Image 1 (cartoon, rainbow, N blue to C red):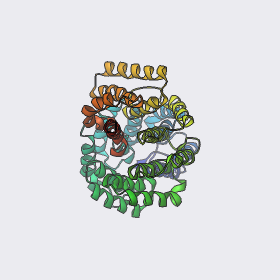
Image 2: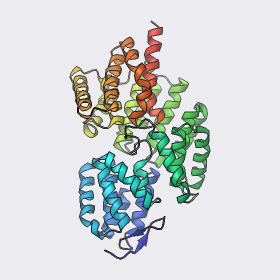
Image 3: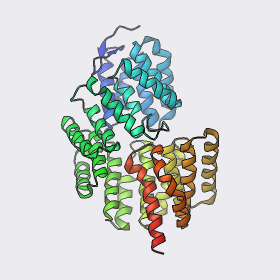
Image 4: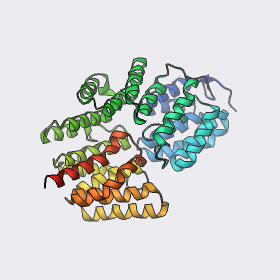
Length: 412
């Protein structure tokens, strides 16, 4: 085992050359803040110490979730071959980062065991929580409450002024129905360190609290200032759009420009899952407002989906695959997706799989003007939307579609 030559911000030893440690910590901070991918700093870390397994593994993780799947798998493979040089904690973290790519259920169990020994390992902690964490895709309806309970359980183990933990605590509080407390916690997190993560938690609480005007101003002020260089800007632009949709402001021209100038992958593409889901959701919400999305934006989003999410099995992405495919209207594409989701449901036999089949039929019915069929399908599915992961405002797409279908029935 390599001599321990450095420590992370929580006092855990790092088996790495001293020259690699500052780059690794910088990359980790960037990634956890969601202001940047951290990939350049992590590449510098492995360049300074090619034998640093944890840096290779976390680099692989960041490359993988940022759409560089082949590079990510190669970096992870390299980390596993070097893992004997790791400390016991690092070796466990490397294995869990690898497992999270392939077997999220096993990774969840392993991550919980890991935290019992190393509760301040924020890399592993970050795998569990948040809108796309292991809990969110666990198939549990109470995953939001479980996430908050985990954070409260380990709260005393981390520093009270830990910006990463406090920011995530705010998000978990909002998701679990403690929105007023979430806003206060998020404001404290932002005072500790201005990050896209903290800004997102505050904006999320504002959405939950119905603070439409205040939330819109907050989003615009941040985007016009330091947020203009943050990777979180794409998603906060989506938040701003949701506030506008809720306020029923902005005509078709405004919405078209918002997408073209702020949402299009051609102008802002921080991470495939965020880019795709935000854009598909935005365009579907336009349709719910009775505004036809420009065909070129639908085609662009479909092409992006084909590059990054041409597969079923990730429920949150599948919801947005359904929405954008419904807008396309192409019979062959719609039939292929419906078959794929049914096949996935039959193979897995899960409640989430059946929910996605139902949502596919419902969204397609709405897009085709069959509003009575859409409401009949959606009414019993509303409570199950939590199984899709993501956040409350993101999953609200299901309820909003139900309400829009009912409104159109009422209006004749």
